[in-house]
Image (tube, rainbow over all chains, first blue to last red; front, side, top):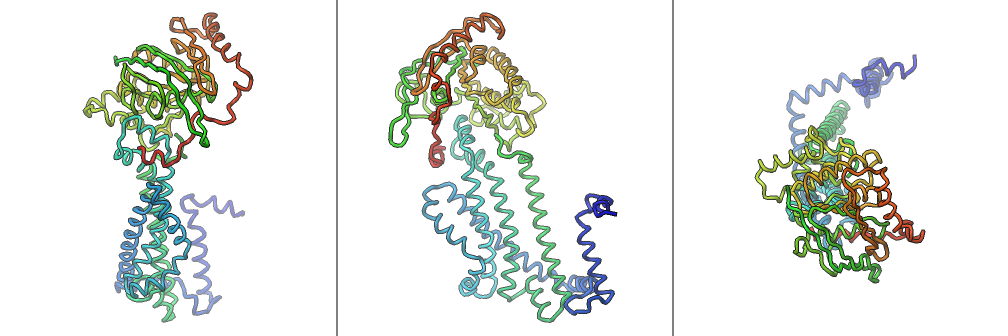
Length: 263
Length: 277
């Protein structure tokens, strides 16, 4: 029996689950059969028990809500600042000349290089973490907003002029909808980056609560089940964020279906 | 029926600046178009025919001479002048009816009047039933019909058409030419069609203005004294068509070839429109 035959016997909607299921099965077998006795690999059942314990004790909720709240603040701060700067750079040649070179230089610096400075400025509390997350959201937002505004077709602007559109009408009826897909891409990236940065900030500026701190606890107490549980939660949150923006995109930008800048 | 406008172009000159050198695009254009007249303008690339339309619609400024609509010098764009571009330029994020509605944004009509006139114009271009369709769901010909409806919805005195069927296949083009003729007769407004298709020009025009390039000038105006509906295969039709083509024939081969440097419409700096909107 060939592998393709095996796959075609699985309903299409479930095919994506085949590999994870196989890995889970192997993992379970590896521990249960005694093939691996290393304390670095605990059984799926142990992780499951840990999950139940974390959920019922409320520890998960404390950590997750702290992380999500931190993430939300950083994301909102960074993406709204990014939107503003992106609009400014995309709108005004003058601003682009003045701010552009500095911006393009700053964005070359690895985000993690800012951590020492941020933690010295804001201390090791939440301020530094939120600032770090905001920076992660800021850069993709600026770049994509700028790109979206710059690529508004001149032809569309002319249509607006033919129908006597004033500046406000051009902005709301032509420029904003035309730039929307690119701005949305920026928003999507900002959301993903800020979630990555949330974990990074919690891990590198370890104080207070958060899912990142759950991971650190697991490592320090040598609880592999806790570490693996934390990893799973982080993955699920990332997946949920992605699914959320994808659904939002399908709804808001439905017109983009199969259109590739055809006008 | 809408009011039809008289367009009067007197001693029109237009030049661009290319690398610091003045480049004449249009030279000494005189053209009078009577109310309700259909005028076709033909010419090779670079003869300035598109620039002429852009000046009349008001998207291009800075010229010498006069362009008068009903005796008033045109200034900027105005709802009494409509245009259909070669590309349909519909906004992909809006449905057919909302695209047309955008044309009425500054019309001053009440919402009820707007709905009525939109429905009327969708009917006029034969697209009833497609009100809620998005541009990506339409064929090229259908999109161009929507663009025509959008251009007419303000009941302009004059409609400019800049190679509107240039990108369509031959069958669709012939069909839309008939449709345009019908619309012209229903609306009774003045129309100017820029095209490089001589047959199209003769089929639709009351007269055909032949332009020649570098700099853009009017070479000759050929009247088309044929009754509608016109039969493209008839002797009278081909005689007119041949007399238009003969104007091209006297050009050198080099003139007929695509201009090596497309001077018709140099793209302005991106910043130009940013502040001009």
